[in-house]
Length: 108
Picture (cartoon, rainbow, N blue to C red):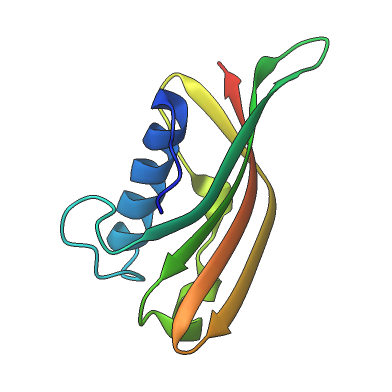
């Protein structure tokens, strides 16, 4: 069963799919069709100077193996937003890359 995602979450998932495809790490042909969202959770986040959401997501990239692990997610670009990568973890299970991310999406 696919998790339900809100607009901001969907935007992040599309951004990640396009980023992986652009960097030659994923064979995605149309958006995020080959990328399986295992988990997607979000919560409001704020500090004295910023407001936004914290996102925790787990993705499965079928057949991508360990070659995906050298992608630099620190350069994610989302117009009008600041995306801060707090944690990235990779694992390979049965030939699929499993990616876990902890991101902050802040209003610019």
